[in-house]
Length: 402
View (cartoon, rainbow, N blue to C red):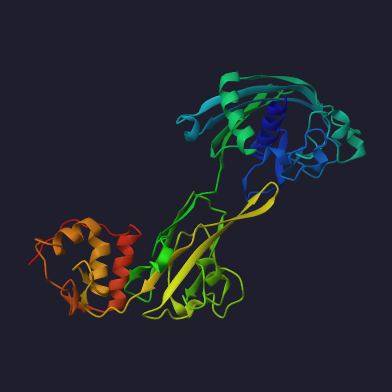
């Protein structure tokens, strides 16, 4: 029964888009920022305790402000619920439930929200806006059928996580105007996210034991991370210098004075929603990174749930900013800003094959001018090209060595 009631709550959230000749359904409120739905936040025995998700108004299409319809109508509803959830192997829309609401008379405008609906809902809980239409909307009963096998799979995930699994849920509605013998239908899809994924990509790594910080050769690195698609999730980053003489751990360094934001306000630097990269530029609110210094960084992801705002933190990455003067590392491979740019653009495997032992470029250390289409470019412009390869904007078509 709870599963059916849950389905009804979700389905009614789509109702404002249905209409007929006589009826108009308008959305008064819908919390579109919620990306995680916790079923435990819905009290079906006392729905008034549930968070407000939606509220809709049904009125006369020709005269929305009318208190009572001159000619009351009889309406009924049919609907189906389907879901596409890759985690369950549902790569195509799979039927979950079909339901219908019996015909009921409608005398005037009324409002309905998810705090009204629950296991004990009855007609006395739904009021008309004006007493001229009557005290209560006499919503009738109905019937529902569910796909027990599919719903059992879904319920197992809900029991384990207390939330609907990430996927696409499709609701198809048909509104019948019994008085005029007319009907209309509407289909809408709702995306439900599970925004827990948050992995740092570069610069650096999480291998910070024994102060083993990955080397980078620019003071303007491109920070990148990966996350589940989430248009309303907000991201923020914090970068701080790690000083071995003062800091016993990366966490302690992050709690100390930050390089971003700067001046330090004790918070993460806000980036906005749906962001997965930051091209570091001190003039936008950060402190200049210095050669020979080590840094740690972390990303915070904030999103709305039915229980309120939540956040998740990434692991901590660290890196060392190395002077880009030419030379070779302990492995004999070239180092420096230009070498690092080449490494990022062609990939680690190809770079090692060319510059490693017996490679075409063994013993060669790239220095001097950088040209693009025959014209010299600056190191900053080279960084922009490198960033394009790292974020996937650029790809290599072919390579030749002269």
